[in-house]
Amino acid sequence: MNKENSYITDEIHEECGVLGVYDLDGNDVLSTLYYGLFALQHRGQESCGIAVSDTNGPKGKVLSCKGMGLISEVCTDESLENLKGNIGVGHVRYSGAGENSIHNTQPLVLNYIKGTLCIAQNGSIINTEELREELEYTGAIFQTTIDTEVIAYHIARERLTSKTVEEAVTKAMKKLVGAYSLVIMSPRKLIGARDPFGFHPLCIGRKGSSYILASETAALNAVDAEFVRDVLPGEVVMINKDGIYSDTSLCTNNHARCIFEYIYFARPDSHIDGVSVYNSRIMAGRILAQTNPVEADVVVGVPDSGNAAALGYALESGIPFGMAFVKNSYVGRTFIKPKQAARTSSVRIKLNVLPEVVEGKRVVMIDDSIVRGTTCAKIVKMLKKAGATEVHVRISSPPFLYPCYYGTDVPTGDQLIARNNTIDQIRQMIGADSLGYLALDRLNDIIGKGMGYCDACFTGNYPTKLPKCVSKEEKK
Image (cartoon, rainbow, N blue to C red):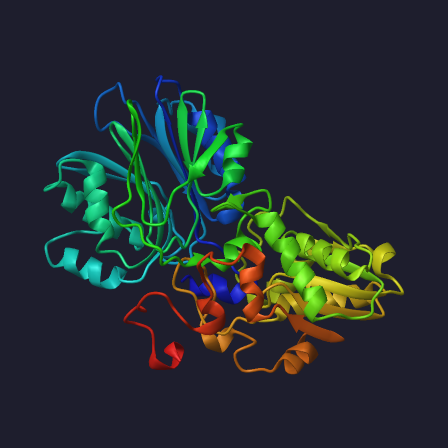
């Protein structure tokens, strides 16, 4: 995890978003990649990249544009002018693991004895350290500090004894422990793969003669593509000129979808494994109203993910829903600040309160989580300064007690406000009149019973082994 950034922001971040496009008729895919990545920008705002190739051209010729910043900042008209091809991969990144630098931007392009391999990943591999050491002791030289390069090396190594690239991907997956949704481009194929637990989403779409692989269905909607289906946990899909093929040999029924995809990370207009993210958030709000009722005059949500949960709370409680916050949509990467003192200005730049909505009223404020409590405290203070007589905070997730090792930058335990404080102590620290969290045993209700999910950040029950570097204290 990028520790420097984690001290500066009180938000949690998804690590990445991935996208792949293959047009079977040979049409250019740059426009689809560009606008699809725009729809995934919320998943990563530190760096991004696009790589394209021509399946009818010379093997191994990959054109790319990568850099630090947002899609609009990096992928300008000038930088994209020569990126022509009918197959391509795109990526947006937040540096949850591996330092935030130009060297770690994706997609990664590797040249090896069998040709080229272009790869983009969402997630985090638990056993990266062991896999990297194995390669280093056989002479491998790494150009980055991210686990995506380790995955690419192992795929390349397996390719030497495999008939196809997709077979090599399947063999490499048997070595990987952790979370990964992959989009891989070889000279003549586009491949998608999802870890057997299904931690993070990956779906398939179709637009005319193009097949699309994307982290979220929202990216398909943005380019007017039709949703085909989700990639199954453990599945490897291969797309070539003859169509799409699937290998489900690693699929199991032991799933551990990241519950925070539904609570916070994914766009509300996305569907993940058949579940509407919007409906999940509405349900979370309804449950909060049932389990944490309070007499109040208005319900407001902290944008963006808190809005749907706030509407659910209002619908269930009968308390009117209000839009109390104006969000600056053009802030960009406000969490990149050199000093902790910059937090206050960052919150005020992002959000402003409408006094007309809250003045003289008892307010229920819905947010998706409390990490360290600093941001929540500032928002409560802003509401009261705007005239709210009471502020009752409701959180649409259980308390964070443990770090995440699967691609989400939930910090170590000593930085989590709920780790060493009671709910009432947290209430006092954030200045709220009352505080309530979503009950742990109600998580199934927000996505539907029978949907296996990971709640390790709340319970410490990790579905895989933990990295070697994790201390005994952190495992408790």
